[in-house]
Length: 286
Image 1 (cartoon, rainbow, N blue to C red):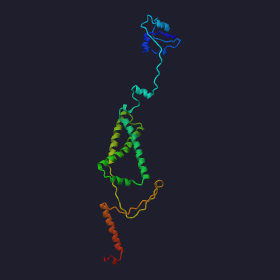
Image 2 (image 1 turned 120 degrees about the horizontal axis):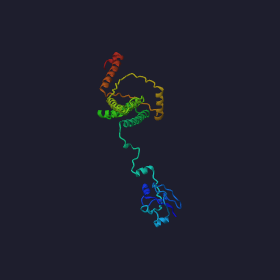
Image 3 (image 1 turned 180 degrees about the vertical axis):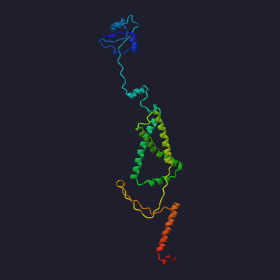
Image 4 (image 1 turned 90 degrees about the horizontal axis):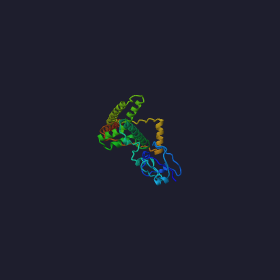
């Protein structure tokens, strides 16, 4: 026999149960279950399955409610993300749901510029350490590409921009450590000022040109001995790459007009000096 309680209709409405209910939550075989309905009628009337079959229960207490025992439904073994996707919930955190602000954008760009500078400086340094070309060779190679001046200035602007941005934005963060400019209006004002300074300084550095004055010295000057750090670096480079002696340049570049004039004057002076040292008989043309 299955012992159950005859429960009022308003209690089932509170549980949001309609029609055939899962009675395993409320009834156990040959055991009495205590439920606490909100109905003022207490205690609830006890009925057995025989009485329910004969229609004796719920007599005079409203419409008849038929209950039966059904197996409980097992919950699906789903992960947290799968349940959220099934319920069409947005995954969190998600950057696309946040509004782009000046403070967050400058903070992210500060870290990106630091990463770009780190990779660029290490690449440039290792290329100079392990490679066979020096900075003059790279400069000549870039000049040989025959890039227009406007495009060349744009490339210089893009190269110098991460350094300028990291320097100015990092200085702004260091100023905050002095416990100043920490209110919201001051933070936004300092951000706009920093952006203006970054663009101005980067454009000025991109337009800057450095002209090297080439001086031709006929006498050989002994090379100064480098310090211990440079000697150690050169030894490491020679051990990795191999000691390859540089070939002395015997040919003289006379492509420039100024160089041609200076070369002609120096050769003329040398010829006059040789003629002065010769005896008078040798000076006469034969």
